[in-house]
Image 1 (cartoon, rainbow, N blue to C red):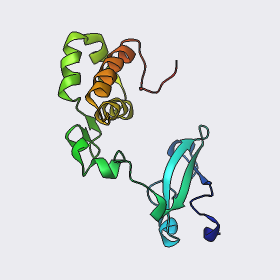
Image 2: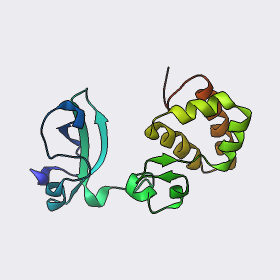
Image 3: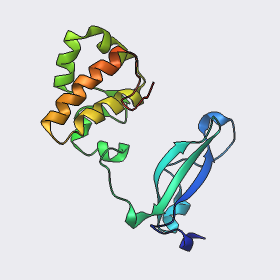
Image 4: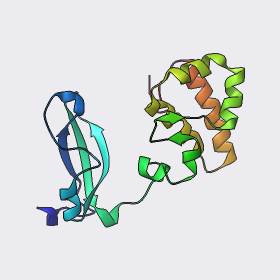
Length: 154
């Protein structure tokens, strides 16, 4: 079966979430069987309250994003994101803006670790200073109106 999974074939595996109540030893990051076949997870999506879908590809076809937990622990983002203790420290420019926008700062503090992380990574991954400035302003705007993460639509 593994020989059918190539870089041009989109392949997904569904596994139960921890909160589903289904007893399983399957977890996204720990599938030894995938490694045995030279495969690796490259993304996941919630299917419903019980199941998560995990996309798999040949390990050699996966490009590092730099924003996965394993990568963050070993790169410059670790200055702001502690993946082990699940703590996020806003960069200095965002902290400075929080002083002028205390409601946005308070909402940010109340967010789950994953949402704080998403906002901070969104800012940190800007390649140009103009993009970063724009994202900082958008962050304050979105937090001020109660958006939990930067890609949240409504």
